[in-house]
Length: 214
Image (cartoon, rainbow, N blue to C red; front, side):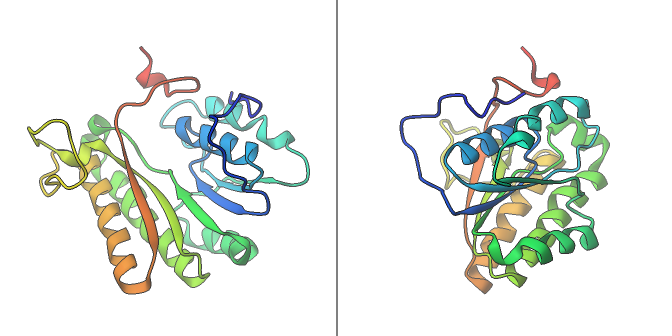
C-alpha cells in the first residue's frame, strides 16, 4: 500500500489545478508516482487494468489510499490500454482537461517477454500507439514515458549514457521499449509532441513487485 502522506523530497512542484493522466498507476512505480502527484496538488486520472502479471490484490492495496482522497482529485479506470473503445470513452470524458500524461503501463520483464512476445508487443507497442493517437486527437502535447535500461542490449560500454547505441536489443521486452521511444520521436517530428523517456534500471522499495523481492 502506498501512503500519500509519506514525506516527499525537498524539491516540490505545485501542481494545483493540473490534471495528470497516469497509465499503470496501480503498480509499483506507478503508485508512487500517483502518490507524489496527489501530494503536490494535482488531480490524477489513473488507467490500470489490474492484470494478473502478479497478484492484482497487491495493486488494489496500492491504490486504496487514493480512493479516499477528497475533492474528486483521484479517478480510476480499470481499462486495458489496448481496448480502443474504452480508452476513447476515458478521453472523451476527460481529454480536454488533461494537461500531461505519465505512461507507465506495460508488460514488464525480460524473461517473460521471451514466452509471450505477441502479448508484449500488443501491450507495449500497440497500446502506446493508441495512447499517442488519443493524446493527439485531444491536443495533449506532453508525455513522460517509462522506457528501460534493457534498450542498451549487449552494449559493453559502461557507464551507460543516453546517446549510446540502442539498435541491437537482445530481448523482446527491450525491443518493445525501444519501439516506444521511436514512436515518441516520430510523434515529436510529425505533430510536435514533447516527451521524455526514462530508462529505468532495476528499481526496488516499498510496494515493489513480488518477482523483484530481495
